[in-house]
Image (tube, rainbow, N blue to C red; front, side):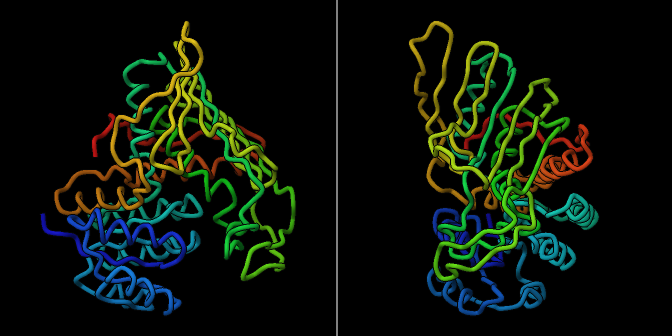
Length: 362
């Protein structure tokens, strides 16, 4: 297969693992032809470290290059919709970091543009393709825990301002714990349990300001613009009931189980959905406590770029990407429903549906 020529837009913290994987283990499918960042030093550093042929400093220059077939958009969340739409209107396929957009309207606008132009649109997270979650999916599909009754998921902590070098955006529109970390959890739940049918939630911002404790901005004050504690009940289309809590407001035990799936015949402990591997534990009636389950599928290391590589394969060979816009739109609509439900004090129906697929061997 002829490699797909791509440009990576955004050379911030997360770009390193993408570029490492795309120019290494996934280089048979993807050809990184250019990197772009509004801060020239970042683009030049990425170009040098990963041996990329070209570094540019404006989105417009990338969009005008007729040799670029697909855009990997890893800009800040508020830029995702704008850059994706630019790419689609320039005739390029677009794949972005999570979330697909900061509003459901912006997400739908991208999907409509992609469909109109016959282009592919997709996005992160792709951790659901890792060996850990794929093994859990197989266990559920094979009936090890019976019919799914309930699920609990939580990402609890006190925010990234103590360690992240540039944490301000976490507290601005389009981020917060739900939009920053929620995509991992909602994507994992939809792949394990199925699509979400409705959401009932309560959200709040417990602290109006945050003080940065990390360098180089130590001591600067962040004005909080988003809800930083989000708790919701998810009614799944299959009938299961789930709970999801994401928070930057609490002091939490880091050993808290991120996802637990409760079935009619047993219980499954699912690994952190922000990772690709294990551990996985299962509790079955009559067993002597929890049993460890080996990971049965590959891609257990940090495999960011796996979803984009599959996306590029579809550019060449056709088909629906595993991390397509249908999944990312469903995740976006589910997350948007948290604030809507909290503001209006009601249960919010989810119109979109994510795709359900069998476990994969990538």
